[in-house]
Figure 1: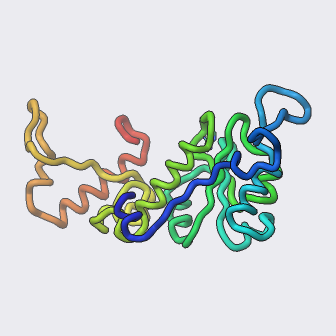
Figure 2: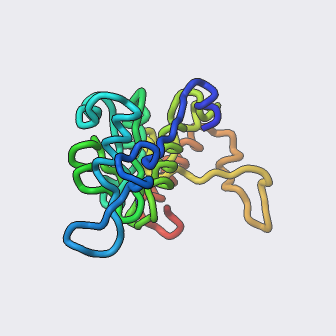
Amino acid sequence: MRNALDLGSSFETVDLRASTPLSAGQVDDTPYGGGAGMVIRVDVVEAALAGRYGGDPVDLRRSRRVVALAAGGRQFDEALAAELAAESELTLLCGRYEGFDERVHEHLASDVVSIGPYVLSGGELAAMVVCDAVIRKLPGALGHEESAVEESFSEALGGAPEYPHYTRPAEWRGHAVPEILTSGDHGRIREWRLERSRNRSGGSPGSL
Ligand code: ADE
C-alpha cells in the first residue's frame, strides 16, 4: 500500500461529526419502531458528502462508486476488488452501531458491501480490508507485478485458491519440499501448481 501511495494514489478520511447538522457532534439516532442500538442518520451522511464533494449528494453516485460498508451487503470478493481498483476514485462509507439508515443505502450509496457474514462494531475495519485488497491491485503496489496475476481467486487460476508455496530449507523436521519443485521442469511444475490449486478449491482437508 505504501508503494501505491508513493506512486501518487492518495487517501483521505472524513469525520461525520465535523460536518453534522446536529448539535454536539451527534451523528446517530434511535431506530424508528424501537429496538436496541443506534442508527447513523441519512442527513448526517448527506452533509458529510456535500461538505467533501459539493453539489447534491444524491447525484454523487452517478459519477463515482460510493460504497457503504454493511454486514448485510454484497459479499466482497476478488472480482469486486478488481472492479473497484479500475475506478479512478472511490468513496467508502463506514457505519457504526446498527449501521446506516436504509436511505443511505438506497439513495446515497452506489454499492452496499460486506466483507463477510459476521457483524463488526463498525465499518472502519471493513473499509481497511477493502482498501488493502483494492490498492494492492494498483500498478506498482506490489513491486513485483507477477505476484498479483496468479494469486488466490485470480482469473489465471480460474477463481481457485492459490497453489502452495515453499521456500528454503528444502527439508524441515523431516518434512521435505515436493520434489517436483526442485526438478527444474517448469512445464511439470506449472501443471502441478494448477492441479494443487484446483484441488484446494474442492473443499478437501487443508483447503482454504
Ligand atoms: N459493518 C459491520 N459488519 C460489517 C461487515 N461484515 N462488513 C462490512 N461492514 C460491516
